[in-house]
Length: 366
Image (cartoon, rainbow, N blue to C red; front, top):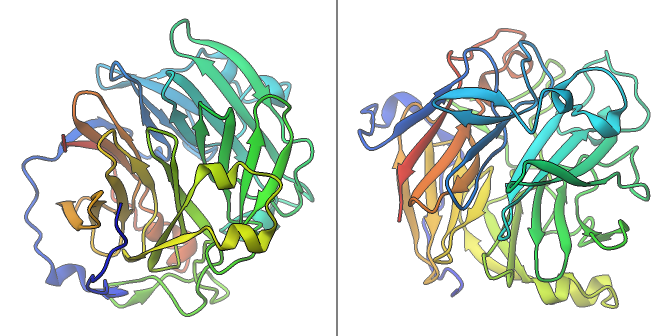
């Protein structure tokens, strides 16, 4: 992929009323969830659709398969129980990812307030977060492995997204809490930090998300801020893409360098490629053609960065309220959730502006 040579700068303040409010007829609703907020979305090779939900009211299941438009507990009801050994049930499913071998990876991430991109709500006094990565074989729907990140700094970590390199047997995770990429060795269960506290992984302090003239700030006036967040891994396992939400540029690095534990921080930094401006974005995902899809809430759109370095709008629609996690099916559809983060009470002086129902959408892209 060529570096982007010239792109317009996506404005940080966009007036929703000024953009077209015409609904895109090609945008299809996959499922509706009432007041339950969908976060993670991923799709298997045979187009099974999986959706995850954080542990917040109203809570039904943490991980589901969408069957005939309805949620079904996955892999079973036991894993979706709210009590018991945390290694055997989901606490707070943050992200899901189907790899190239049809293994579903479930990132269960419940950070301490210091590692959360939302900060402290004053209720949870945990000094350490709880994290695990669960591997499920989609052929027989059985849990194969559970990784518990025993060597992770759980007081600071806020594991957010996961991608799995099936060739190198490594998982790459974004950690906005530590402003780092976490590399998990799936053979040993050990982790290490990469590119920690660098200009590629730290949020830009001067970028404040603004909607219709309203800045996204909490009750204390602190703006929403996330260090490295969205990540993508190309289907050939060659390139790893990443960026903070509060950042305009997209970055990538070859996985052979990310996987090399002998490289120093400075040597690894030298291997990072700046792909140019793509705007404020949330989720990322790659398709089989090498396109990188990026979601953005500022102009209610999903964009695509082509292998030639061209940034294209895939869909723009007033219903895309914080488009978030994505999955690409073999059916040629792009599936994605809309989390409506900017409309939650903590960013609106305690007023809930969420537009029910929460939904997952799809649009034909291949």
